[in-house]
Every structure is written in C-alpha cells, then in structure tokens.
Image (cartoon, rainbow, N blue to C red; front, side):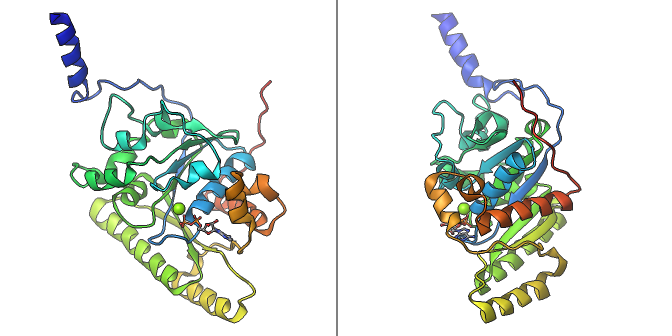
Length: 300
Ligand SMILES: Nc1ncnc2c1ncn2[C@@H]1O[C@H](COP(=O)(O)OP(=O)(O)O)[C@@H](O)[C@H]1O
Ligand SMILES: [Mg+2]
C-alpha cells in the first residue's frame, strides 16, 4: 500500500523535476534549417505553400523533412488524408510543458505517405493552448527548446503558422532561422506583409532573435486579371524589393483538387502549372539557402 502511494507520488512529481520524465532522445547528425511560413491573414496560401515546400524538399530534393501544423484547423493532416495515430503526444501537451508525454517536436510526429516527410499534427485543443501560453514564463521560446534535438534528425523543419500574429506564430518565429511570407495580390494581404515584417523587427529588438526574411512569395496570381495584377505586383516590388521571390504561384484548380484528394500537388498532377511553380519555388529556396538537392538513396 505504502509503496503504491510512493510510486504514485513519484510519478506525479516527475513533471516538476527538470530532466525527469519523457524519453531520452539521442542526438542525430543533421542540422535542420528551420523555416516558418507565416502571414497575418488567412487564405493567402500558407498551408498550400508549407505542404508543397515540405513535400517538394523531401520528394524532389531528397531531404529529410519535418512539417509542423500550428493551425488548430488541422488542414495538413487532411491534405495528406492521413489518420493521426491516437497514441501520439499532442503538440498542446508539449507546449504546455507536460514533460512526461513529450519534450521534443519529433516525439509528436509520424511518417506521412511521402518518404522522408514527417508531420507533427495540430490538435483540437490548440486554440485553448494558445491562450494558456500567455501565462507561461518564456512563452515565446517553448517551440525553440522543443527542437533542440529534433533539428539534429532533419534537414528541414517547416512550420505552418495560424492566420494571426499570436503566441503560436511568435513561437514559430523564435524557433525559426528563416521566414517565408506568402501573399496574394490584394491590398489587405500586402498590408499584412508589412505587419509581419514589423514583427520581425520587434523580435530582433526586444528578444534578440535575428530571423532572416527569406522572401515574400506571390500566391494565387491570376494572369487573366492583367491590369489589376500588374499594378499590385508593381506595389509588391516597390514595397519589398529584392525580398520578393522570382517565382510566383499562379491560381489553379490543381491546388484545391490535390487537397481534396489528399495528395501532394506533385502526386496529383506534376505537370499542372501550380505544381511546376512550386517545384521552381523549392529550387529557389534551396539556392537562397546555398543548399543543393541530393539523389534519394534507395534502401533495400
Ligand atoms: N495557387 C492556388 N490556386 C488556387 N487555389 C489555391 C491556391 N493556393 C491555395 N489555394 C486555395 O485557397 C484556399 C486557402 O489556401 P491555404 O493554403 O489553406 O491558405 P492559408 O493557409 O493561408 O489559410 C484553399 O482552399 C486552397 O486550396
Ligand atoms: Mg492554413
């Protein structure tokens, strides 16, 4: 009886003891580049870009990739039409410091249908978690400490952020080395790009984290709307100059149709203009990071 009570108490106290509980993960030999895909607005192609970039890096460039869904709408698991394993620790448990469940993002990840692409899925309580984070000391740095070992096991970690500049996005920005801002060619979206770039400056000034803005990616570009688009594109270049990626993602039905079928854009229709553009974008990202594609090693 007494020993039962003692082991129960030990179990409960474990989570308060630094270094206790959770699994002990071995360090790997990689050094992931960490990319945040963020914008202050919804519907601008963040998730489509995060999935297509992560899948492209794994499938087309031979990289080992972890994609992290920070949006409570959980669109990414749907995009892969995958069922999240029920025994997986959740990202909320990790963010709220339940160290007996998980400490590192890789512990909350599972393998997708794409080789070498793992996913840390979102969970239904992520919205509440975002508010609860406000009470935590060092609340902006939780994800950063949750990738310390994880980043030694991947070549790339890609964060898909929620459509606001709240605590979850801040956590991703502080964990990331590089930021990619997707923007469609609307006034609201362009204003949003300004907002997030301002946040990047604030983070550098107040929290000492120098996040590199890798670029602004024009998305859902509709060439049929010629005069309006030319004007908006001109403004994009006037405002953000060389930060704008050379690649632009055209509007195309392959994007929503691939999502509906639970396939990556490359598996859905590799020749579609959206797939071709994302493939070019993957190349541009690699070039900006001085990285190169590697041939996939086939085992067995
Ligand atoms: N290039 C594109 N062409 C057409 N539709 C697109 C394109 N990119 C995204 N979409 C569609 O627009 C909607 C919003 O895109 P999504 O990537 O989910 O944006 P966000 O994550 O910023 O909210 C989705 O229905 C998606 O299928
Ligand atoms: Mg999204």
